[in-house]
Image 1: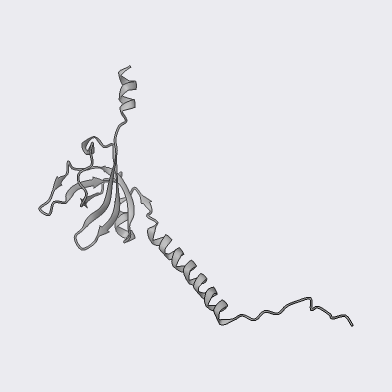
Image 2 (image 1 turned 180 degrees about the vertical axis):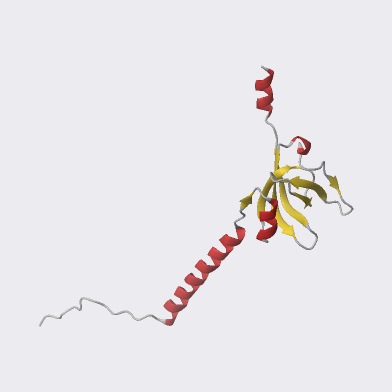
Length: 137
């Protein structure tokens, strides 16, 4: 007598498999949420940064020379292309070549309570020394 082998196997989902599936789905959802939180949009308009309510990269031009306040924070005024201005407060020291900057990118968020932009980072774009060498030739 020959024994017949079934062509299909029916597997049951065990509680362990179900828990593993739920953990994978939960990890995917949390990863997506974390990625959305870490994404910082880039804007050239101060009012977009104010309205967003989240961390952004704001680019503008130097509106004041900057100074240190009583708490030791570096503050300056940033101006966008529309002429709007915002006071930027940074806990980092003043970047080198700050006064020579052709544009400034501040990464942080707008504080509605104090009406200032709280910068986590201040990046300056300075004229390149290579352009100066080309002009001299």
